[in-house]
Length: 64
Image (cartoon, rainbow, N blue to C red; front, side, top):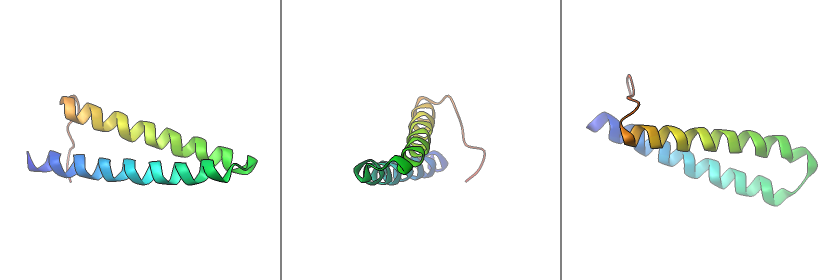
């Protein structure tokens, strides 16, 4: 399905960007970056969960 391919690609791209940003924040290793790293991790987890559910067919995007 074309619409699902677009969403899957968008989620994969978002996951990669979040992973890259999380890597940079963790490497900074400063106390003030902890909250930012935690927020990035939560977004990363949510994106991965959405991708898994999309691939299993448990969720369907309403529109692109």
